[in-house]
Image (cartoon, helix red, strand yellow):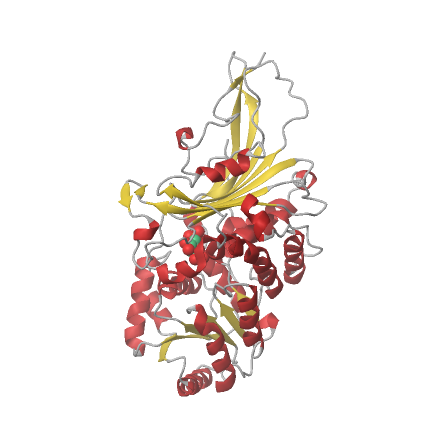
Length: 525
Ligand code: BG6
């Protein structure tokens, strides 16, 4: 069954206020792959105001035209609208300037300030300034300080600082970074990016829950048996060993993206759909999240590292053979964890998370498994009924489906699982970065991470990271192209559950035989 309707793309009309966007790290990978194409999509959707300027900032010595060539190439290679007409692209490029800046050199910042002031005068811009730091984390605090000292952040209009992850390496370093940013910017002016919060279906969790009366009565420990959140990737560490060796999957994915999804699923309905009301409810989830000691973490968290194998038909190297990774590295590329939210709604319901690199398929999915029927009237059958599942597909397919049990059509009496499904054409959705840039331009920080969220997330993660350094915490090796170490299956089996297959994992041979796999019909009396 399939519901035939479309979620509208960004609704027409509505433009961001006039402003100047300073893109620090403008020649870097994130700018090229995501940010510049996202800005161009916003331009095409007429979201950017008529009075608007982008200043690309990076260390490389380029002039405006050379930088515009790079922007053009980035749009044609990575944009959602690569085949855009030349005159439209030219109109976008005219808005773009470039400033070479060495972040250790205060004079470069003064020159940047002069350039911005001149542009604002020429184009009659009101002095609103959006600073986007797509930089290595070591530069966040020094750049913020320079923005303060050079006068760039002393502006006539509003000013906002958008900052990429990782926000610190642990709670203490995150707090130090936050203090440094707060010397120049107010909390309301700091937009901490978690790009998962810009994903269509992650945002849709809120609407699904709070706009449909069928779910709310069931959204609790009386009806839900467990929640499973998977974010699997087929890529390996790529060329990021330097960073990844200091992060691992725990800091790279769990501290931010995975916990954000937990919050979206578990939060209480906000009193108003206002940004602080929503973020207040999210943060309460983290306050109720059971914090493990390092000793306890060993029983609830599994870590793994990929060895050589085959992913999507290609032979790939093991993590320790990747460029830049030390031969004896014990950095985890996979984490599975069992979490508990000790509040009235969720007490006793395990939330299982798993994330890993070099897994069999790229998929992000949230599965809500409902409790079994109190009495199975089909008891006199071979097997049992499968549970109802609500599956939120975040990536690559976007959609929602509900798995129900139904009678097989015809004269036989088999009961079969059926899916009521809504899926959305992925290329209709704006990219996460388009939404987030647009929100930051508008001053809407709902889908950005507030400081108390970041801090509490680290307080959960720090003892787990500490456990990873203890001798009794095993590092399970898993073959590239698999679904992670079997210890992750055992984590759920301890509670009588199993991981439900995610997109790309349709073949039951990939996973251990379930106790009651939905693909195995049961016979009614
Ligand atoms: C990033 C991580 O935040 O998210 C990467 O640093 C990871 O390691 C990426 O690959 C995954 O994002 P997505 O949107 O592809 O699921």
